[in-house]
Amino acid sequence: MKQVLREYAGAAGASGPLVFLEGTERAALGEWVLLDSRDGQARRGQVIEVGRELTVVQVLDETIGLAPASTRVTLTGEIARAEVGEGLLGRVLSGLGRPLDNLPPPLAAARRPVWAAPMNPVRRRPPSEFIETGISAIDGMNTLVRGQKLPIFSGAGLPGLDLAAQIVASARMPGNEPFAVIFVGTGITQREADNFLARFVGAATMDRSTFYLNRAGDPTIERLLAPRLALAQAEYLAFERGLHVLVVLADFAQYCEALREIGAAREEVPGRRGYPGYLYTDLATLFERAGVLEGGEGSITQIPILSMPDDDITHPIPDLTGYITEGQVVLSRELDRRGVQPPIDVLPSLSRLMGAAIRAGTAPGHRAWTDQLYATYALGREARLTVAIVGEAGLAPADRRALEFAERFEREFIHQEGARRTLDETMRVGWSLLESLPREDLLRMSDAAWAARPGVTP
Image (cartoon, rainbow, N blue to C red; front, side, top):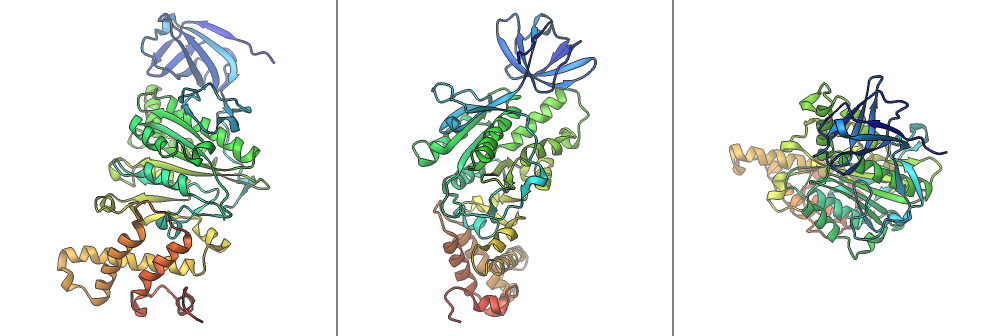
């Protein structure tokens, strides 16, 4: 069906990346808009709000030089769609889907709506299949599950992007089935983009990856579109082609800043710390597009990365993200300063689906092993604080053993120097640490679980 073009001479006004139109007819949410200004530059936009008196258009290009009164605005009647397909694998694209790798536009297999709805909860299958990342602090203590959304809470200067790259390069499904990888960079620097790409160019992972890069100098409004283009590609590969897809979204703090900037331009009533009141709902429309469909073969697993402002985990961005997602992996600035890599703080980290993966069968005694490692490490961290007050000589013998355990746990278990460990290797390291303690210190482990540890003859 041929689309009907509607042209309007002049706009009512502009504010930042927004243009306001009066007297529009049959405008639709998400509709593509063309803007021709007297500066000779053609711009694209999208309808984001339709009203009786005013229609709001987000401009997807720079608005410097755009004169609203002399701009010819065309409503195309076409809803925004993303080009998707296997032809996009191995490509590097902008946040608008344009090639950045000096190659021709990719050959798309289909076009899908950008503003798609989250997965229907009725059709969602509970995730339970273990994904081996090769990182002990995740596999052993905060297990990643196929179809899960597990964010990385990072901070300025912490290696959140490096950790995501390590997961992408080493993640394995049961049977070593490979992932298709979708990486979305929103508001990242050129150096971060180059460093991330350098780890995959020429590697086998590159041929099954699609990269969407919205760099810090790109238009702010593009940051809202890039994750949705990427998720449209992920949903096509997962639910129409039956592939397992791993989606890395970084840095989601920049996405939320873009929402706040747009909200201010629209003169919306701000919520917590100036962010829009619909921040939770907007994030949910992205995060809830992960999962496994009942009766389907593919899956989408999300690893969002967000930099906590001032390392504040109670900030609205990580706070709301934690309500939507199934846990979080928290990076520690203290561990990073001490050279522990990756600097994962396992105490505030959490995987709410870990129990499902353990019940599905990861390794014998995994739950008891994890509980005891957590308990002893927590005691060691408390003892470390007590030492600052009374000195190590003032500790009870059990506390001194827990303190030594905490040091070894960080040095031998969490710290890996980029080396990949299988789950069996991770379990062996953990058991060796527990065996260094007397049995009376292992209060969270039953006698049956202790007697069934590897290397013990029944």
